Each structure stands twice: as structure tokens, then as C-alpha cells.
Amino acid sequence: MFIDITWGAGGARPGAHNISLEIAATAQNISCIDTNLHLTCNTSSRAELIDILNECKRVGIRNILALRGDPPKYEPERAPEFNYAVDLVKLMREEYGDWFGISVAGYPYKHPDAESYAAGIEHLKAKVDAGSDFIISQLFFTAKDFFDWEKDCRTAGITCPIIPGILPIQGYDSLRNMSKMCSLELPPEIVAAVEPIKHDDAAIKEFGIEYATKLCRELLAGGVPGLHFYTLNREVVTEKILENLGFGTVWSHQKSDERALPWKKPATDKRLKEDVRPIFWANRHKTYLARTADWDDFPNGRWGDSRSPAFGELTDYHLFLHQKTLKPAECRHLWGEQILDPRDAGKAFVKFLNGDINRLPWNDTELNLETGPIKDFLIKLNESGFWTINSQPRVNGADSSDSAVGWGGKGGIVYQKAYVEFFTSPELLKILIPVLNRFGTRLNYQAVNKNSVCYSNTDSTIAVTWGVFPGREILQPTIVDPAAFFVWKDEAFALWTAAWAHAYPHDSVSYKNIMNIHDNYFLVNVVDNDFVKGDIFQVFDQVLEEVKKGDPAAFSPIRPMSPSDPVILSMQNQVLNSE
Image 1 (cartoon, rainbow, N blue to C red):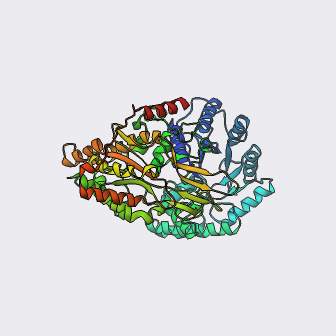
Image 2 (spheres, one colour):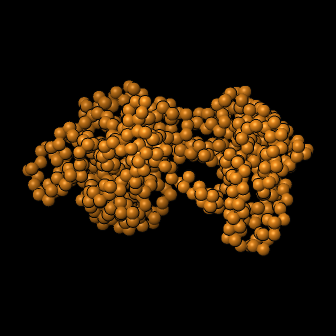
């Protein structure tokens, strides 16, 4: 249900807590994972802790594991104001009431600094009485040890949930070091098992997986409220244990019938009221969240144009905008060793749809389930020069728990307008737009190049996904918004250079071809408003027929529309005024 970020993550040095805060905020607000941030108090003043907690509140971190902290490697210049975790718990409750969810650590064996085992339990009760919501235990070796300690805690009057902390055995040295740190003697049966294999890391991991799986099964059978794993930043062993326990898919794939909205909402109060998003960022979830992380309000369909200060500079989002995790050689392996012709770039889009590669610069993840029924049509489009980066099929009244398109929980009916978004050449665009115009108001489209030269037949925000649920208003969570499209196109075009062109030498033909696409191609989105009987791909069949004819005289003139156009300008002024 949540992950922990230790205090000082990234290195035990002065200022390391800032890294912990950054990691926790990113995990919670960008990766949408509930976060429990560890916070130690024995090297900080009251004022410093207040500053840290205020920053936690600002970025939406609501859960804190209150700890005293180990003796600092860097000696503080003053005596600590906070000697125990109970002092930190009291501070949080005094200053913030119930805003923070507070957890504390419990020791199933005698705490190294406690006068006795019983005194350790009394100190734990004091932390709970001060306002702790639940307890996470330190490591232990047998289920009996945990349940005996839990019984003693209950006898002492502790009534809050107690979650067992599981430390999987992942290596001989780490096991020894952890037991020394906690002043614990290893049980003879563990010593007997690991000593003969202490130089065989693979064998020790297998033993650790088997031992922890058995321990967890005993704990779950005994009624514990959950399991808390100390992964030590090595997740493979923990994942195997979870698979053995039957939890293999719990964290990796969220069921579609559990989606409150078609997109995953971050676990932060700031976004509780956010119920509408532009579809353009459907496959670039992280950049959208990064761009809007500091917003206190999420207006329905008015995101501002690319000049709005709300979006800052594109380079501010380097962690999410640029795929720096891929080296140039990896990019070339995925998208083409050489791009000798623009059509070579198009081959990468087809490979992505066929599952031969697992990403494109505009797609962080593999294809969604809903793409299945339209995949063959998308491949045909891409082979014809319309390189798709986003799409959805029309849906006329599907069950809200449908595995492919469902959202909002059980008991609802969901709808979608067919949508397709792609890059294409100016020559194909000249053929495309007259065909789109034949369908009148049934089709809405926008086409824009990097210089904001735009062709469009709409200046209205269009809902492309909506749902009807018992006793609730109709929800319209996904939209196509003209103003947001101008913001998105900056990011979309930047990815040609930041994520693709950089893979080639700047004097190469491949680099020049990618830059030619960046400089001249158009980004286009098309919405088919007929969600009952419409077939957006039949529209493109007509386009392909016109391509075969190749008769420029058959095409009506295209009226350019740029950001200085009165319609667009008026729309942008409304956006900026609303901000």
C-alpha cells in the first residue's frame, strides 16, 4: 500500500534529508505511490523540524515514520533538542493535529538502549499515547517471537495496529551487519543453514526467500494486518517472496475495475479535485504531473498556452521529458541504426505496434489493452505515413468494470469517442484536411507544426471519454482541449531532438533526417464525434485513396491558423485571465 523512503536516502551526509524529501515527493506526486517518509529528530532543532514538516505538507507527503535516529556520523555542534522519537510525535500532533499519519518503530527484542525488554514496551506505549497511528516492527527471526512480543504490547495497553517488519536474508555479510546493528544474536538454525553456503550468494538468496516465505505465511495465518518488507534497495528477493505468497500481481498491475478515472491519480490532497485531463499526455503521464505539480487548482480544460508561466521551461522537466535512461546506442537499437529516409523513422512506429520494441519517445509504456481491437488499423496508418503516438477506439456503453476500457468502479457505463494523434508530412496533411472537411461537424481536428502554424476546424474543448454511474453526475475525465494542444506540441516536438536525434552524430544523414521531421512535420489530432456508428479508420481509407490518385486539383484550399489568429488569441486570453 505504500513505500518507505529512509531519512538521508542517497547518503548519510549533511543535507541528505533534502534528497529524501525529493525522492518521496517524486514517488508520491509523479509515480503516484503512497509514501511513508522516515524522519529522524536527534540532529535537528525544533525550528528545523518545523521547516521540514512544512515542506512535507506543501508537497503532499502525509505519512511520517517518526524515529530518534542513529548517532550521527557528523557530530552536531549543539546538544540535541529531541532525544527520543516520542518528542517528534508530540511535536507533529501539537503543530499539525491529525494532518499527518504517524507511525513509529517497535522492537520485538530488547532495544539496544533500553534498560530492559519491559522498559522498551513502555517507551513504545508512550509513543502511541503521544499520537502514533500504527507500529512497524524491527526485524525478528520467528513468528513466535513476533506474536509473543505483540501479546506483551497488548497487555501493556497498546491497541493500535502492529505491522511485522520482514528483513529477507539477501547475503551473508548484510545479515551479519544488520544483526550487529540491532544487537541481536542469530538463531542457531539460521547460522547452521547459512554458514556452509556463505560464499554462494545465489544459494543464500534462495534460502532467504524460502525462510521469509515460511515466516510470512505463519504471520498471515496468525492474523497480522500486513507485511512490511525491508528491501535494502534490492527488490528481487522481496518480489519472489510476494509471488510465493500469491501477491505477484498486486503491485505490478492495477485492475481496471479499480481505476477511479481513466488515468491514475496521485496520492496527494492537492489533486483530490482534479477530475479532468487533456488526452495528449495519456502516454506521458509523468511529464503532465511534473508540469502541474505546483498547481493548487485544476481547471476543467483550461491549461494555458505554452507561453504561460505555469508551465515553465521545458528543460525544467529533464527527468521526465528527456529519456536520459537510454544511451544513444540503445536508442539506435530501438528506433533505427540509420535513418536514411524519413520513412525509416516510420518503421519504428510500426515495430512498436507489433511489439518488437517496447517504447517510443512519446510512449513510456507498452500498448494498452484497449489498443488491441484497433491495432491492425493503426499499423496500416503508420505504414502509410501517419505515425501514431496516441489513440483510443470508440466505445458505446461498455461496462465500467471492463478489463480494457473500464474505469470508475462497478455499476457504471462508459463511453469513448474514437481518437487518433499522429505526426505526418506537409504533403500528406494537404491531402488529409480536405477529406476531414467533407465530414463536417462529425470530425474535429487540429494540426500544428513546431512553429505553431495551425490548421483547425474547432476552438472548443471536447469530451472524448465519459461515464454514467448510479446516483452520480456524468463524469467527463478526458478531453481534447485546443489550448492544451499548443502546450503539448512543444513537448511532442522536443522529443524528436531530445530523445531521438541525439542518438546520432550531428553531421550524419540520420541526424539531419530526424531534424527535418522535427522542423517540417505536423502533429495532428482527430476526434470522431460519432461514438455510436462512426469509423474513424474508414475516413483514413478515403485519405489513402486520395493519396493514390495524387491529384492536387481535387483539394480545397487550407486556411492557416496560427496563435495570432483572432480565434486562438481570444481563447488564449481567456486562459491567461482565468489563471
